[in-house]
Image (cartoon, rainbow, N blue to C red; front, side, top):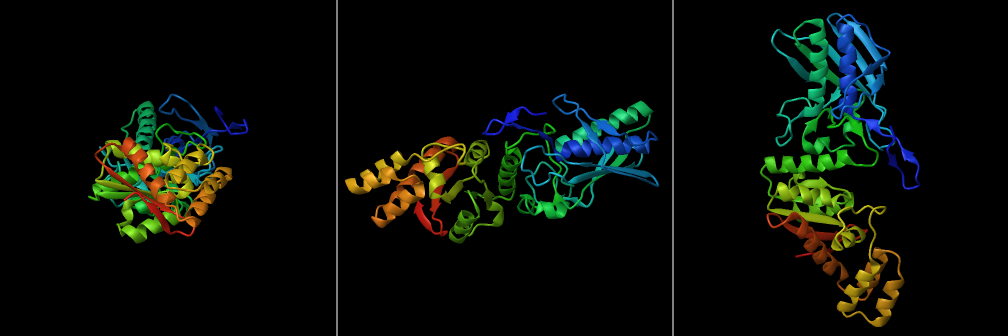
Amino acid sequence: MSDDFAPNGAPLKRGWTTGACATAATKAALGALLGHGFPSLVSITLPGGQMPGFALAHELEGSGFAEAGIIKDAGDDPDVTHGALVMARVERGAQGSGVTFHAGEGVGIVTKPGLPLAVGEPAINPVPRQMMTGVVAELAGAAGIAADFRITIAVRDGAELAKKTWNPRLGIVGGLSILGTTGIVIPYSCSAWIHSIHRGIDVARAMGLTHVVGSTGDLSEKAAMARLGLPIEAYLDMGDFVGGVLKYLKSHPVERVTITGGFGKLAKLANGAMDLHSGRSSVDVQSLVKILQNLGASDYIAARAAELETANAVLQLAEAGGLGLAGVVAQQARDAAQRVVGDATRVDVLIIDRAGAIVGESD
């Protein structure tokens, strides 16, 4: 399936979530456990009604269990789990137990409150659980037996892959989360990243934190950590998705949020951009020139600034002239963010230079 396009017009291929892969693997394993053998292609129905087919990459039967695995295809999305082997082992459960879920190797365990799963539960999200429960009910119903089965999900190398995700900070230890609400990965939608931002806010709130920090990158996060000294759970790696932080905080407020990032990105926020990616928003150099003029810059400096192509070049020119450009941009970025988040959460802004120093702040 390919309904999306790259900037050059080339079609982008969609992919499948870990939840969809785990569901297909569960269906194949349960079919084998019930004596139907492993299919060459297993089809499932996604929440939206789509019916993709998955080829099996792993098959195993033993005493009282069957196991199947599927290689995750994330399409053209730069997903860290692309190519991972997602496996489901299905065994008979105790009478009346229903479907129970367990974490195999490479699947994490929830250790902090605030997530949509209880502490101690395997990190298999609600929609994938519903999908797997659905295929168990379907096959058990056709066989005329009770849907009492134990499902163990594993991901090959999942513990290593999880280090590249938000899971350690969210308190999901030992591996990956099994994710997905639609079953479909839309290329470059960054839905998993935005989902992680929201879950990070949920965890911070559940832990009673009243101040969170959204950082555009590692350098700005380190600067904020040195300045603010908050618990690690307060820090949100928001990347370019400042809108993802602010809009979620509007309905899930905390007392205070600090937005921190480089000058160029936060100059975009000052102009109202909620997606700070270079391909989706741009710096308005002329607005920076107007700020310089209001700060008393000479005609010569203003003219030079107007000829520059990057925000950081304008900042360097302003700093050389002793003009507090970064501070004004921080105030304007704060005002733009405050309009989005509303009155329940107080916003402040820290602007970081390329050496990691704070060069402008709204307060």
